Length: 455
Image (cartoon, rainbow, N blue to C red; front, side, top):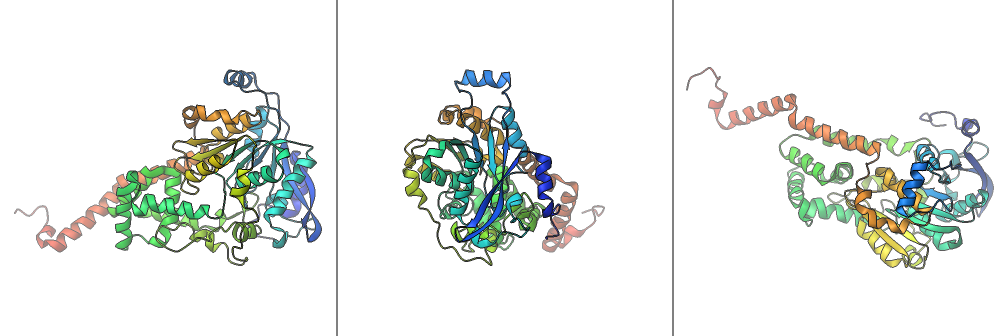
């Protein structure tokens, strides 16, 4: 038992009885280990849509929901039941029948029937794919609209490729396609903020390179910090932070972001994010951190450090580009215009390779719209269950105007506030003034004279 658990794992069954919307499927740990464990999934019974929602759908030319929605979040360590409860309720209130599976080794599907953590040898992508099919079978859902985000997009592609009869429509949100995607993200980050090959950020890159060369910023850790600031504040926030660092300010904001990224709780929050048991999927099969090179602005070091203790990257079980080219399910591929985790050119290439795919690139958005632009993701999900998701690109401007997720707004606002405090704080101004006077005194001793001395 881990001391950070919010409550005893043995109380899971009591929790499920209280909730009433969580189902259990008994699954084998693996093909070679026939022991059973309880795999959980949540299902919200849809309510009758509100009249205003029906009217809005009618005006948009969208039919009523036709199939349930299988929603697969990013991962593989992300839980589904507790973190997305409100999202399921919102979609259910609008008439959508939502199913979300708790990934094996995570949250309410972490332990076997005796209360022991699942063994790592059962953590395989092929087993997770079989879990999804088992959940659909248990829920008596012959066909569903599937929304997959990030790693969930990888699973959604696999489900559509291996079980096309179970997938009526497909939404791929910033999908993970191959293990090489992370290297493409790192290259895009370096192009924007190190090489200076992106015109809009070339001046920021020039200043950042100088700060690293002068030792004012540690290049080994800069990648993760810059990526986080870019994700929540965009290029303008990165520019402001780098400019402040060049003026001798901004250290508090920089250090705070770095410390938050290094906290263990980000990678181990019970029933929310639990990466320890699923490390073989993340690192051995999907190669998380495999491309870390330790060079300047490499954001992959943290992912690489989490892979200790599991076998090294051995390759994924599926040739996803080849499989994707054979998927004929109507598909909407979503990407954020400023995504530097999985750059939008990867999603564009995927959409071009799929016979029935349409691309929607959202201006001003970052990685995984399900997390950062939940209202937009809800629209895509609701249209997908009606088979109309491929019509959404014609509404790009309206969709881009939808608000960011409250959590993302809070992070962006906090970042702006921190930068403004370091820029305008009277305490900072006094420190900088004293520093300037000391510098002037070192250059010109007469500068130390009192302001009362007449010159």
